[in-house]
Image (cartoon, rainbow, N blue to C red):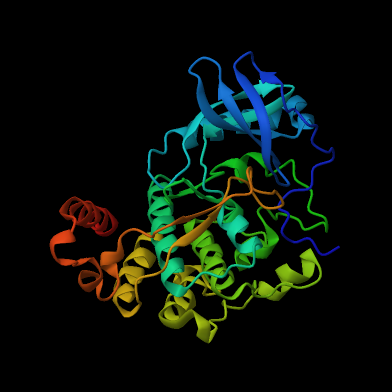
Length: 348
C-alpha cells in the first residue's frame, strides 16, 4: 500500500463528533481535517465564546493509562512554548477520546496549498523556512523535538503567519502506533523521516532540520525525495543518503544541501539555518502573495472552499525592496516601520 504520508495507523476509525460538546465546554462544529492521529474540529469554547480548534484522538487511547500519562505530560510541556510561530495549546483532557484544544487558524496548512497543485517559489519557501526555523530554534533550546515536521503541521493564520502544530504529539503516541509495515523503533511520518528515524536511532533537533529540508524540496518541486511504493522502501532508500538539491531550488540549494545531510552531526541548527536563509534572501526577488487554502489538514477540503491570498511580510530581506515601496507622496510610513520591526524580529 502506497500511503507513506500516514504517520500513525491506529486500530479504530474516528467517529464523527460534530455537534457534541466535550467536558460540557467545547462544542464541536465542522470537522476541518482528519489525519492518521485524529480529527480536527472548529469548536466554540462555551466559557469564553472563543472559536478554537479541537483535535480529537482515537477513542481507543482513552483506556491506555501509559499513553494518557505521556499525553498529559507532553501537553503541559508544549503549552509552555510561547512563540508566535508555534500553535498555542489552551487545554487538554479526555471525554470519550483524548483531545487537545488549540488556537484556531483560518489560513489552512502548507499541505492544503500543495494539494491544489500550487508550487512555491524559492522566495516563498524561504519566508516559510524563516518562520519555521524560529519556531524550531525556540523549541529545541527548551529540549523539545517535534519528530514529525511535515506540511500538514505547517499552519497559517488568516494574515499569513506560520505556526507549527503538534509539538509533543509524536512523543505521546510513540508506543501506541503501528506502522503499516512493521518497522521497529520508528515514529513520525515516513515521507519526511530522517535517516536516523529510519534506523530507529535516538533523535535530536537535527532530525527536524532534515525533515525541513525535505519540505523545501517538495514545496518548490512538488516531489518528495526517496519516495517509493512502500513505507519500508522509502525508509530504506533514505538511509545513508543526503537530500538531493534540484536546480529549481536556486539559491536555496546550498541550504537544503546542508540541512539535508545524511550525518545528523553535520547538519546546522535551526538558528543557523535561519541565518543562512537571511544571507541567501538578497539574491532572490520579493515573492508574490502566498495562496492560503482555507482551514484544514491533509486529506481535508477547505472549510468554505475559499482561497485567500496573503502578501508575504519581511520583504526587506529580498533585493530591491525600497524601489517597490517608494511611491512618492503615497508612501505609507506606518507600513514601512511595521515591516522594519518584523525584519528586526527575524534577525534577533
